[in-house]
Structures are given as C-alpha cells and as structure tokens.
Amino acid sequence: MIKAEHIAGLPEAPLDTSGSPGPAGPPGQPAAIVLRAVQKEFALRRGRTVQALDGVDLTVRAGEFVALLGPSGCGKSTVLRMVAGLDEPTSGEVLVEDRPPAALVRDHRLGVAFQDHALLPWATTFANIALPFRVAGRAVDRERVGALIDLVGLNGFADARPRQLSGGMRQRVAIARALVLDPEVLLLDEPFGALDAVTRRRMNFELARIWAERRITTLLVTHDVDEAVLLADRVVVLTGRPGRVRHIEEVALPRPRGRDITRDPGFHETVDRLTELLDESAE
Ligand code: ADP
Ligand code: MG
Image (cartoon, rainbow, N blue to C red):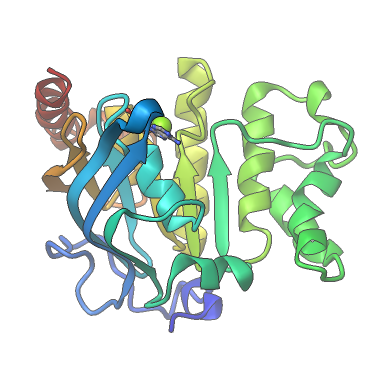
C-alpha cells in the first residue's frame, strides 16, 4: 500500500514525470485506482434505465495526475462518484489501493472536492479546512491547517467566512480541505467549473504547483481541454453516453508547468488533437 509519506517525500521519491509514462502510467509505480470493465446503469421511472458507462477500463498509478475529459452527460461524475465510494458499478470493478473505495473512505484516505464545494457558510476558512478532522473524530492539527492555508495562498483569510471570499478563494478552501488529512488519492470534479476564465487559469497553475509539491494520486474530471493538458500526466477522453474510453493521451510536456507552457507548440498541438476528439465524442 502507498503511504502518504512516500508521496510527500518528493525529492527522494522515484517519481519522474518528465519522461513519458507508459500506457498505464508512470512505470514502476503501483496502480492506485483501477476500473475494470465498469458498466453503470441508472434506473429511471417505469422500469426504464439509462446506461451511463460501458466497459470502462482505467488505471491511475500512484503519484499520477490523470484528467478525465468528455462531453457533458458522458458519465465523468459517475466515474468519480464510484471511485469516491458514493456509488457502485452495475458490473465490473472499482478498486482504490487494491481495496473497495469504501475502505479508504472509512480510513479518511480520500480527499474529495466537487464543483459545489459545500463549505459551511457560517464557518471560517480555518474551521472549513479543519472540518475533516472533526468528521474523522480526531483532534484538529492546527499546524497542519495553517500549513494548508499557506499552501493554497490564503494567508490573512483564516478568519474570513465563505461569503467574504471570492469564488477562486472558496475553491482554494475546498481544495485545502480535501488535502488536510494527507489523502492518498485526490478526486476533483470540475473544481473550477464555476469560475471565470481568468480565475480558472490562475487556479489551474496553483493546483499544478500544489500537486508538484505533494504528488498525490489525482483524478480530475473536467470538460476544459486546456485545463486537462496543463495539469495531467495523461488525459483520458471518454465517448458520449454511454461513456467508454475513446483515447488516452500521454502529455509529454515538461514539468513544472508554469504560464510559459502555453507558449510551447506541443501544448497547442495536444490541445488541438484532444479538442477534435472531444468534438467527435460530443456528436
Ligand atoms: P457527466 O459528469 O459526464 O456530465 P454524469 O456522470 O453526471 O455525466 O451522468 C451520466 C449520465 O447518467 C447522464 O445521462 C445522467 O443523466 C445519468 N445519471 C447520473 N446520475 C444519475 C442518477 N442518480 N439517476 C439517473 N440518472 C443518472
Ligand atoms: Mg459531471
């Protein structure tokens, strides 16, 4: 099993994503998330069903950042909800660290930030980020919460309530909260979906920086191609519903990826190729 400290010890860790990871992720790293022949059907009224996913196979390796890209309604959130233990496949298998996701949820080893970040409106930034400690029945590690506030650049806003923060700041609170218990796996469902384009891009670079420091296994759902290419080691493109894996793109762009990455011709080539695939998926 991968322990958080293996991932946190970045300088020594044998994680080098500057090379091109193999089809199943960085070579030599164990699989952290595995979806095997996952099919998902939802029951509708009058005995009708809708098939959201069909035969999805996907492996995310420890320390890897994978983006899941696909047209609206193709089952991206369904994938993430199953990995988060909030739903189960109709057939097939979802494993996190070789166990059913529920086991990791019980141990508070999964960090989750979804689009509706669900901050407690009456609670301060500090209290919102500290919430997982309370949920887990643990004493709040004030130093840890302070370090996260620092990491996401919210110094000076520890005592602010969500309504006193901008949209981007609230997203950062949600991401800090997802990270506070040192999760082995980070799940992000369109975490920047509600932001304007400029703020969204800034948040992308912040997330890239945070991920570079911690290298937590991350699965990000997005429909923004630039965002996927900026952040991910691999981009998985799903077909329209029922979602199937249509294409897996290894993003060979160098890290760390800062703003100058958008001047890299490789960036635009990759974005163009994936945009075309996504457009075909949406048809
Ligand atoms: P995405 O996140 O890619 O936009 P979702 O995973 O949310 O797509 O949904 C995939 C499909 O499954 C959609 O057609 C959606 O309407 C359907 N769906 C999702 N959740 C449920 C549910 N709880 N009950 C019925 N249908 C659902
Ligand atoms: Mg969704």
